[in-house]
Length: 263
Ligand SMILES: [Zn+2]
Ligand SMILES: [Zn+2]
Figure 1 (cartoon, rainbow, N blue to C red):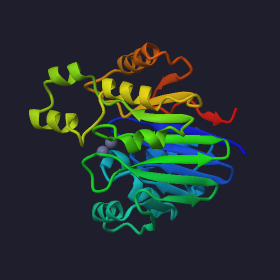
Figure 2: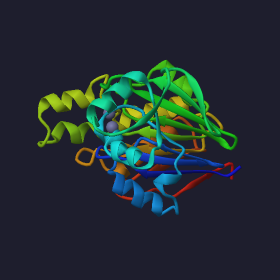
Figure 3: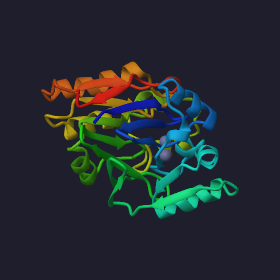
Figure 4: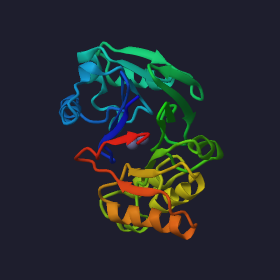
């Protein structure tokens, strides 16, 4: 079965990825406008009307910005936990949306994809990460978390491809003059976001022989650079003697190259 995965865009201003496994077509988060998601899917020759569902990690707007319009236009089903669904309904009070609820920590099937959800520490109602298993391999989603936990590391030890948050460089955040101290504090907190150094630590911890690539996602535009994030993670892996993992950047503005699993 053909399994293809494309990060349509990732960063503090919007996150959305696309997974196609046989006939099953899923978005993971919908943090761009519906129009933007439509045009990014079109670069793959796909349209929102063909989606099987949207998996939602949490209700922050950089993850659900286009969800209301996209799903009410197409009738696409939204998969989220109860508290996240309630928050989505508050944000899109007039949208006609179809939900499938899951319990955080549960595993459920959407078409040909086996979805395992797990709790992550972040300042949202009930934020989750996902491990998406297909017949061709598993993809881990680990963005928007203030710190790593044993559970997170355990879950990700099965991923062949990992999307990992690498939000900010400590020094750039420290020196940033645009963000007030309270925001900086929130970003750095145990329920905020992972720094490059913290992401590097997670990468080393979750590295197992069949993890072949890590996409660094959710970069802050003001307090990070793709090169800095990648070099920080690469250096930590090299130092730990791990040489089989390719570290790749993502972009806020353009889709990443599509990865075919199992190739
Ligand atoms: Zn968030
Ligand atoms: Zn986010």
